Each structure stands twice: as C-alpha cells, then as structure tokens.
Image (cartoon, rainbow, N blue to C red):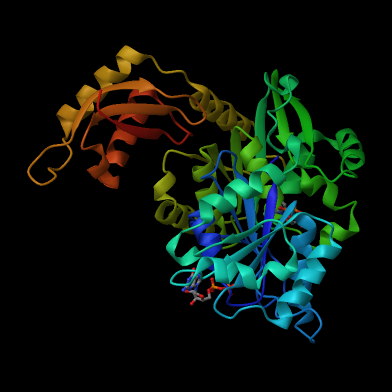
Length: 436
Ligand code: GDP
Ligand code: GDP
C-alpha cells in the first residue's frame, strides 16, 4: 500500500507550495470533516522511484499557545496517518518559538522527522541551515519550494525512511482475480454496494479483518469470475466507532486506487455531480487505472430527474467519455450484473497486450489522417511505435520534435489507438521518445 508522509509546520512557511511541487497536483483531495477551517489536503508524489501519499496539514501556529483546537486535531490526525514527518520551517523568519513547540509535538509521535528549511532562495544556504541545527535533526535539508529546488533531494531523503514493505508487489494469489476498488464521496452508497455484492456471511468475516489498520482485500466470486475488492472500509465502518469520525478516508481511497486494476467511482444520482467527484476521477486517470462510473440510487427517480442527471454527466464527464456509465441501485441490487460486466470489460482492455508491428501501422494511419501542427516551420515526425506495458495500455512512439506535440494531438492519438484496439474503459498512455 502507498506509504504516507505529512508536511507539518507553522502557517506560511510554504507547505502548500511544497505540496504542489511534490504532487504536481490536480486539485487535492480534501478530508471531509465538518467545522474545520483548514482541511488536510492529499495528493500522490510520483516523481521519485516509488510513489507515496503527501498530506498537507494546513497550519499549526504553535501547540502551546491556544491555537485553534480543530486545526491542532487535523495536524495530529495527519501525524498519526503518516510514516514520515516533514517538518517545514521558514529560513526567512528564522527559528521561532512556535517551531520548537511543533517539533515537540512531532517528536512525541516517535516517527522519523526530516527538517525542510524552506525559502532559501537568495539566501546563504549554510547560514540558513546553521540556524536550525539546534534542533538536532540529522536530516536538515535546504529547500526552495517556490522554485522547485531541493525537492528531489527531499524525496530521496524520504524514501529510505518509509516502511520496507510499503512498496511490495501484491501477493501472487491475487493475480488471477480482478482487483477492484470502489470509491466515492461519503453516502454515495459504497458500503451498501459492497454488502450487496458480498452477502451477509462475508460481512462478518470482513469485520474481523477490519480490526487491523491495513486496507483489506475481500475475495468475491460472481458468475464464474473472481474479483478482489480492495479496501472495503465502508464495510468495516459500521463496526468501528472511530471511523465514523471521518467517513471519507482519503488515504485509503488513494491507496486502494493504487492497488486496484479497475476503479469504480460511485456517484449519487440524487446529488449534483460535485467537484470532489471529478477530482476522484482525475486521480484514477493519474494512477492510470481502468474506470467504471457507477451512478447509484437510480431507484425511485422519475423520468425527468433521470434525464437531468444524464445531461449533467454528459456535460461534465466528457473527458472520460470512454468510461462506461452504469446506472444502479445498490439498495435494490439492480444494475449489478451490468456493473460487473463493465468491470470485466474495462479490465480486459486495461490488460491488453498490443503487438509491435500493428502499432506502427496504426500510428502511420493516424499520422496520415491528421498531422501534428508545424513547429517553427517543421513538422514533428512520428516514426514507429511499440508497446510499453499494460494497465494502462502504454504506447511508446519514437520520432523527432515530439516535445512540441500539443496535448490536443496527444489526445487525438490516444483516441485513435483506443478505437483501433477497442480499449474501452481504460486510459491509454502515449509516451514520446526522441530519435530512433
Ligand atoms: P503554508 O501556509 O505553509 O501552506 O504556506 P504557502 O505555501 O501558502 O506559502 C506561504 C507564502 O510563502 C506564499 O506567499 C508563497 O509564495 C511563499 N513561498 C513558499 N515557498 C517559497 C520559497 O521557496 N521561496 C520564497 N521566497 N517564498 C516562498
Ligand atoms: P457510503 O458512505 O458510500 O458507504 O454510503 P452508504 O452505503 O453508507 O449509503 C449511504 C446512504 O444511502 C444509506 O442510507 C443507504 O441506505 C443509502 N443508499 C445506498 N444505496 C442506495 C440506493 O441504491 N438507493 C437508495 N435509495 N438509497 C441508497
């Protein structure tokens, strides 16, 4: 499962700037906790050798001085969730008493701490670091988050501190089943669906498994197909009081997406499509996973409401028009056969192995149909293509001036390949390589 690091420090030291630099993020996923002024933000850093979740804790103005108790609680939750703590301080402000009290809080957790001395741009780095040496933190690194300097070194320092098993591959017994994550906003109907699929007996088993902290995998067999449902937090939730505090676990959502092959994003048909839904879908794309959209609570909606809902989906989900939308009622169990079929189809497309010679021929046809716009009078050349892996199906294209190829042309190629190979339900990844 994806490991987690938390960025902690006073307000304004540059945590969100660092968060953006690490996650190169689309919109961050925000923990759903009512009454909190500054929420925790979550994203995935994928630039290092191994991906990990980054949590931006918002602000902590100083543990000893009557700070907003809810904000402090946010930070404590993040500290609890993380395996490594990145303590961000501000080289321009220098060491403030608040920094010391925050560090005290971090040390009480017993977790590894890296100090990131931010805003060192234009400063003498040795002087900047020297001021914070009194903390006695072995790894104290200079950073300029705003200029994206020092972030690679920070990532390199974080990776060895993460738990050894964090990057382990999935157990082999998972390999012949389809790994499915079911994600969605609170109350979309995830646990209702999972319970429906599993039936009552299994539920008891998963309650037991739910006593561990780790996301769990639940085997499911339906119509002769084997599945593994990943992280059925929704099933456990009812049995665990503390999980009621935070219904929507962003970390589990990101972890289950990363461990799955197919992600089902559940949307509540009775609610308007929310930004959070689009953000979730964006993360599925970032992760390269196959995608099925389950529009739930389709029962009891009249024709007008259904049409309104379908229009909204069409308008806002055009960027994933290749993903199957299935209209279901988790409560009554309708549409589930179609849902499972969509999962199987998306999985088949995602795992598809493409042949080398055929890919180049398809590329030639795509190129003949529509050529990339000229770059300073020269046309980018696309010479040949070969397969670069599955889940998502990846197509490596060799050519010249490929750096200048516009996103629109990349999308054209994606769609061309998708149509040619019937890659419905999965993102298609195009990678350009310069030269032969
Ligand atoms: P947060 O409250 O800790 O999340 O801090 P922000 O990321 O919002 O940054 C606070 C301010 O510091 C913003 O005005 C940033 O532009 C600025 N800032 C962040 N990183 C740097 C940096 O590396 N160098 C400089 N000079 N300014 C920075
Ligand atoms: P979760 O937070 O995503 O796990 O959502 P739950 O499964 O706990 O469902 C939230 C609420 O929506 C519960 O009251 C469910 O009974 C209700 N619900 C779930 N699925 C459906 C459905 O298909 N139709 C209707 N009408 N209600 C549903």
